[in-house]
Image (tube, rainbow, N blue to C red):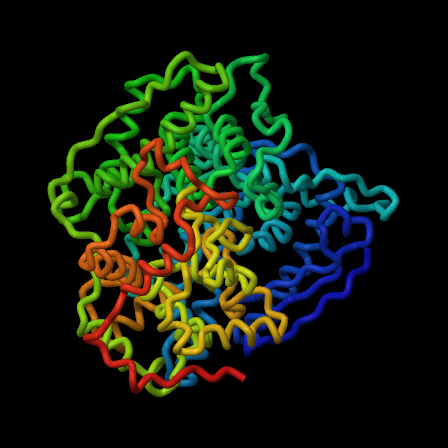
Length: 622
């Protein structure tokens, strides 16, 4: 089991690398382990290198001979790991203090603790264990086995067996607790940085010393942690599957799948299982899946992963009331708390803004209701106990105007900006997208995501009319069925040279009209939209947040309605539906109601005589 280990630097930080024994490559899924030693100090790096090399040798052996891990063993390992972190931080502080004194400079660790704390809080929230995987390999075997050298005699590669299961719940517990131990240590060291030596652990896992308390807290939170465990691995299993899902329901997808991890002797499936069935059956938008998954996790955290036939009206009432008390924005410390702990910590604090009733209704309650509705349709439950549940009306929200159409001075300010006057395209604007996406929205009313996801072959010609075909494909989901539509290309866009740009993209064999935009399975163009709104605020000076990219759609609608266009024609251009049964009559094979010449005639009534387009410099992208 000889192994080659060495030290190297990257951006002045020392890293450690070691080769994985050949017999363990299949299990670890790596040929070598490589990770940061988190220091720029050569002396500290050498100390950690020597210690980690020893730990790794025993860890590799532990993967061969360890007994089946249980919570008791996890608690013991975590307790020793926390003690180890205290020792390491103490040594680092002493060495760095001596080094700082010699250099007459500050202790280097102080500057990075806030960033490290924020990173660990996010890692815990997302079950991202990359920060501690190396720690687990380093320490688990070292502490789990007796310090008896005879145990390692006679071991060779042929005797290796696969005991170290990365997808076990116990291993998940170990990594979760290691992350929390690192976070607790960072917080303790931050207190020491300001000479506060009375620090009390914030994580219940470490509020009492010793493995007994750790085991007790792990057992108390068993249901919550198990839910996180299943969700974490389900997310990994489905990451590649999500990109391959089609618009049609797969054969058998409507059959509720009871995962192998359950053993309830035919009992009703849990809410997490029904959620997965709902996801597979309906093929909802990824944004909806993401939002609903968050709400189902919250429900499980509060009540456990209940079978859907055991969920009561009072459970949903309590869920609504608890979610209503969550802060609208959570800081790093709050994101590391459990829901009930968080709600209790801000109880009585009226200065903290809570989630709006609209968010509670359209996300939290909608998630539970949709999942239970699917359970009802699958004959798992007789009724949906979350159906029709109300929330307190938000008077401030109902009085609020969410978006406003641009005023003429706003539009002129945009046209006078560097993008249009000097061809000054910031990196976030993604080249041609910065010029064309606002223009297309201004003269078509199309949504940001619809424009960002356009392909070259979505610009077509029919009956002598050049038009945008807003349709569903893997780069762009349409918001509703009525969103599938044809929008003529306005004469002003042709005047600016838009069709030349399309021809250029086709000549260069670009499949997408705006090829520099990163593809996002949830919504292509969302990062670009964030850039545009920042540009609007910081460069153009429109700081009122009621004005954003979406204001183009409001401007488009208002302009056409001011010209007394038929409301149905305007809705057809915007991709809105009146909800009438009659909307489904008279459609062509592409589900389009109005003929293109009619739409073009209506669209050409959109004019901006109050704006000066004469100084616009057309984009040049060679």
